[in-house]
Amino acid sequence: RAHTKRALDCSFLNNGTVIATCGQGDHNMCIWDTLLPPRSCRVASMPSHSSYSIYSMSYLPDKQQIVLGCGHGDLSVYDLRQQCMSTELKHAHSKAIRSLALDPSGRYFA
Image 1 (cartoon, rainbow, N blue to C red):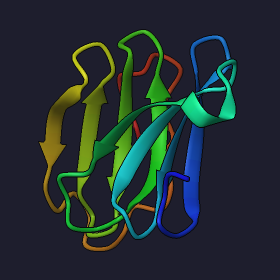
Image 2: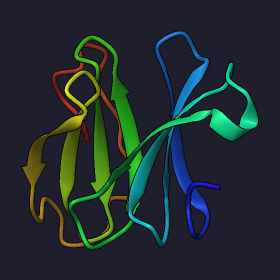
Image 3: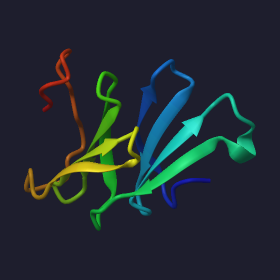
Image 4: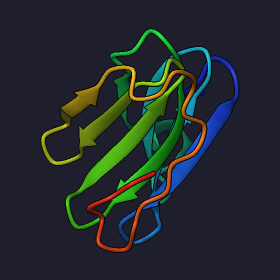
């Protein structure tokens, strides 16, 4: 079990056997390897720096980063290689960011 309430979004990483999920209640993003046994398939768990749930996510494959949209309008960028937040934009929106979309180049998101 990863999230204290429901999962709100997910994103397939790399070859599709690794999945990132974000959930309500625990403010976490989790990374899962679906090829591992169920008891050990959660390979990473990263708490949000926001005091609100992570509502949305989008994967940047070329940069190995995940853009996260939080409940209070914050945006964060998580670097998978360094396993840390690389960028945070506080109050990017006045309300929860419930959806994210990336352009094909990965330079812009909405």
